[in-house]
Image 1 (spheres, rainbow, N blue to C red):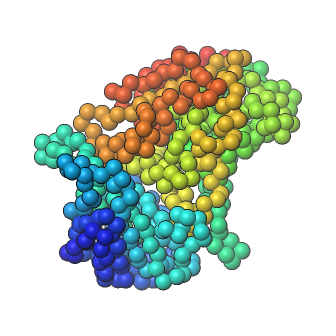
Image 2: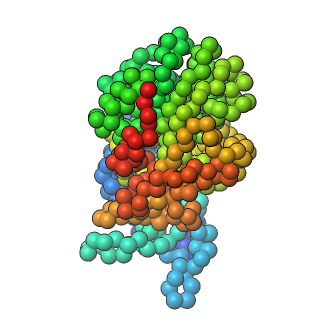
Image 3: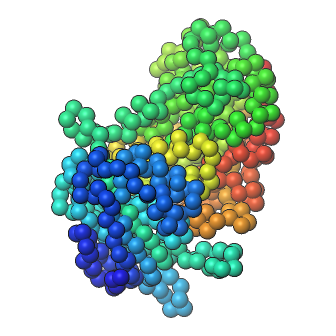
Length: 509
């Protein structure tokens, strides 16, 4: 055990150096993992999920994150425990207001040219956060193949009320474990691929449009192939279209609907099996690109009538379907959107999509998917891990699909300059998340962190009011899920109130 003095330096084994800025504490014994000395491509699997569980990550989240990180090629090479962490306080014992500037700089040996490196920070509350190197964070290329990489790990402190008698009030930022993860880099034409996440998304999350039945709704390989001729043949009656959100796919994003057998069969019956699932890349292409692809699959001979259920960013894609520039580029007639339902859509954007907050977006989703698990969340976390790797290489471009949700996005400003359409019905569902009574410590800590970032009510990803009020685009009479229901951004379709309202709002054929 070594002492970390405030504004001091500690030299540790394996070429590790810690430099403190306003932080004091203790440094535990560093673990060097098997395979750390060689290429990670050659390293075998290790018990990383078990280690995460030991670090207080809830069991389900530890298994999910540990397993998928290894499948993504991420291997732990060094693990560094920190404890008894303190930051300066004001008189009276309150943490100083500028405590966010307190940090430790972790200096570790850099990976080779064919590898990347990132730090996974695990707080004692069970919350995890991703940290890229300082050079990568600035977007100034990469510091791979140099002698060292430096990671700046911020040290916030606040208390998290924990209702258990044994723990009382627990502080976030008192204990942390820093895992240095290394991963192989994709190469293209003999060079490291700068926008690797786009290549990955095109390969593993391509466009898709399929007609489903209740039996094929959850199977992305099943359902009737969609052709222009088939859509024209069915165009005499309205279609129900599902459009998923960020990092997702339809079979995972709308899994809660599929688990309600009565609703699933009722919707397919109402629309005479004219139910379309629209899968699309959400990271490297913006909503207008997604909308253009969708329109290009439609008949040129006649417009379709659509009722559209969207989640999150999918609502921005649906809004682009009626934009003149998007429609003209396809040479197709604009579909008639009879009903548009926004569920947790960032119509006013989300601060987490600001390029300075991208790490927060990845952190929030990583924690949510583990702490509020669904049978299909691995589909979403796989994409997040690829974005983490992308950012860790210093490539800040190639993320147009995420940038489209930035409140300062010009495209979003253009969309919100116009009022909601009056030719159809527009609905909205939103929530102000609060952890349920008896919720775990990790979700309580995550909620406190996110509330500080937003400063207003939110569902942990999107501001509550921004779903139905965005500039001139106002959706009247929204359904605001009560905080007592504890509905977070990825949880809406598991909520009975939401499913009941969908059944009420969707008219069918």
